[in-house]
Length: 595
Image (cartoon, rainbow, N blue to C red; front, side):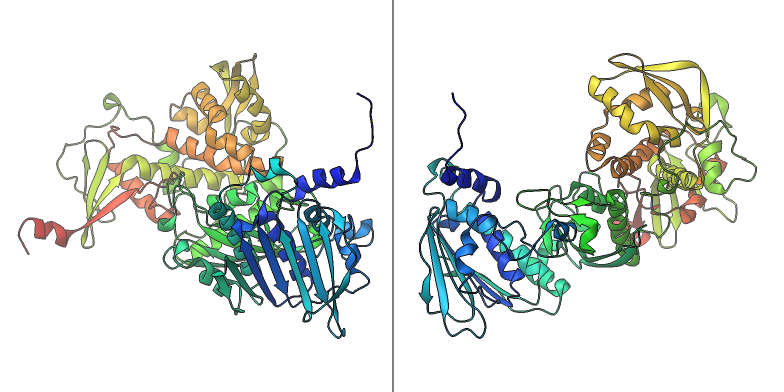
């Protein structure tokens, strides 16, 4: 078949497919035009879920009569003038293709009047064929109407969902615009039925609560944080996050905005979720609405046809900024102990280099927490002193009296409560925090293996090894591929070897972990490696902690209980499970008929 140039009408329809996916896409583009025009009142009306009719009226600056015919022309815009403007895009629209794309697949009419003009003007384009503009009776502002979306492209029209589903997507777009711009009055009606009617609000926090209400759970937590990136760029993060108990297995209430623009960013979503680590089960999703204000030069919004994704100049740094902002908000609300952030704990030293050299950790000068981490060994009945079972262990004045029940639970009285501690969960949290603190101070001590440990993994896991090599080196692990489905480990952290952790099994689990794989895919390489750090430390702590069924000596139990006060988030293990359950003694008395 001969090569030929496509007709302009067909070119426009193809281009429209990148910008105009469904009615919600049209509404988003037109809303952004109204906001760029400085509108303080925007009215949206739809019929048939938006496929039959979309009407948007605003009180913005309007379009000059002479410019109106160009409004529907391809690549015509008033928002940028040269390539330099793309380096710092401050407006929502800038490509000059949205109206042209919509006009190629719909019957579009624009009526507009600038402030101070004696009359308004209108122009119409019927599926790409533009008519002459003419006078129109309209107040200052712009009214744009889109009818019969995709009527001339039936293949596209049949893939639209039912009217209620399309209307729901339009509602979501309008809600996003309303939350990002609380000083603008926004309304939406469908078939003359009011769906949204929001008056100007005092601020984003009030507008978010007005829009979502109970969807964010009870007593949502405000986020207010300011940070400075390494190049001096200022970043402000504000918004609202839910409490841990309001998290759900899946959540549609997750919104991110950059300079008022709604975006989808897996890396920043991961950063928010990481802030809840240890406060809820890993499968649970937080609810949040966060607004990021940053210099436009630090973010590229010209990387996605619908401008739903952005590219950061400092991707890893933005991951840390959002993580720390949410973590600080949780901490301020008493839900997370303050301390060194896990993410970014080793970023100042980079990710390249050789595995940490073998070194010794001075056990004599170790803290109680470090002693628990290093001195405790896999417990074997023939290697420890006999402990009376299940009699009450007499405690020193510094330690509570306690029982070890079923070699799993540590039971003692504290205040007016009976406390039952899961020895594995508590020790896992203690070890997690100590490993984290150790990484902040330096690389983990590594021991070279006399004989390399081999493990069998999938080819996908082998490919993951290269991404984790730098992180493994910081953690004292040296591993390399030994074939298409095999890895050999030649160095391993001293404390894990001391706890009897199998190097091959550990590395195989890390390389095959779905959570670590998802973290590596969440963003660019630097942020991805930071995201993978937490689940690897989870795994380290879990593998090395005492297990259910391990028999503990009096000293070991005392040391573990004393470590609680020195441990961040000790009430939950790194996976979010509780480390202890409190039962009021008064409840026990009632059960025995003493009250």
